[in-house]
Length: 120
Image (cartoon, rainbow, N blue to C red; front, side):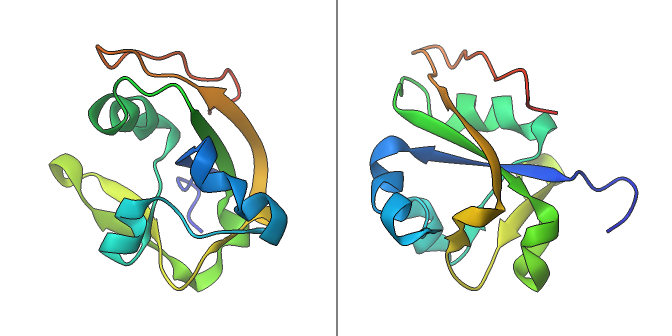
């Protein structure tokens, strides 16, 4: 890991999609993750824009702060929106033991939200 690599990345989930994972300890992700074949994450700098673009008008969201160090070789940084490198996890569900903290967030109909203070 380079000095510029953050220690945490963020997964946006719905409360409903997380419900089963709370019992199994492994989160398979959102429908888009299954369709794309990998789990989408954002950095702290990308999080608000991801919420605005893809989760407008949703109130049942959970942000999972995930430790990069716990993800292993399945974590790949790939270009996406505007050429930015986004973290993607390949090779299976997210082990919830890698989650450092979680917080609820809502996105209004205009795409505005207040991120938790712990996002860094």
